[in-house]
Every structure is written in C-alpha cells, then in structure tokens.
Length: 226
Image (cartoon, rainbow, N blue to C red; front, side):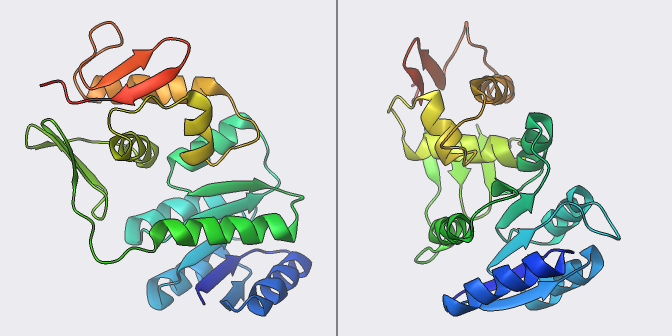
C-alpha cells in the first residue's frame, strides 16, 4: 500500500481517481487547491503525487517547482495540456511522468505502479562510477573529477539511466520510453537536445566525445574513457 496525494480541482475526477486507487489498497488524500497540496506534501510525505496543472489558486507548473524545492516525491502530472513544449518543460522541471486528459483509470494505475517500482529500494544504493564520473542515485547528485555537475532533473535522469547501462548502446526510442515515460510517441529531438546539454556539462562535444559516444543509426552509450 502506498500513500497517494491527488491535487485536482475537478471534483468528479478527484472522486473517481480516489475511489479507484483506494480500492487498489492505496491510502489516498485528495485536495482541490495548490496550497492545500503543498502543505500536504510538507506535512504528510506521500509516496506519490498526482498533479493537475489547471488549479484555481496557482498554476500547477509553479506548484511543481515548490514541491521540488522541498521534496523528491515522485510526481505524475495529469492534465489537459498536450503541447509538446508544455510536456517537455514540465518533465524538465521535475515531473516523473505526464498523462494527458482524457486518460483511462487503468493507465493511471499502471503509471502509479511504475513510479512506485522505481523508488522502492533496499537501502541506499552505491553510487554509479564510470571513469572519473560518479552518479549518486539516492542523493540525485553527479560529480566529475570530484567537482559537482549542475544538472537539471531530466539531465540527471538521463545520465543515471545511461550510467546504469554503462557500455550498452541505448536507442533514442528507449530513452524516450524509460526517461521521458513516452513509450508511444514523442520527439527524438527532445533526446538530442538533452544529450547536447549533457555533453556540454561533461566538457565534451559530439565531435570530441569521451563519455557519451554516439553509434550512428543505433543510439548512444556511456563509456569509461580511461
């Protein structure tokens, strides 16, 4: 059983999602405003948050920033906003998943289960080490040559996933599915842009790569350059 916080202003949706998740054994708290939701995150420490973006007192994007300032709780955004720019911006701001309304309850339940699987760990995992690069999954920190890397949430997720698959070629489609949680679509340009940003922060370029190596027509891999 997990503690699920729903922040949704439409009462019908709030009640339906609450009822279904509670029937699945989850402990559900459902609130209709951003400020109530933020207080619940701070006080209650939920296991996962389901967040609508169109809230009456504060835009959900701003609430997401506030949540990320105080907690690393997984956040599933469930909203009617379906523009690519909005989706990318929201995921980069720290959302763990993104669902566009209307969605099926079965799909939402599956996303909740997937997020919970990712955060369930047995103790603190050891940092992932690739050459002079160290990725601390638990602390969500990365260091290169002992110096901290200033990564956005999605850049860190991308680096972590590649570090977990060190030496393996990963396709952009797989990165979209596993890092951006978009298994049925999405633009590969999103992956290209984030790889470019990540390369820059690793002090390299596509032409002069050390850690991030592109296998043309296949994908990308993270390797030990030493």
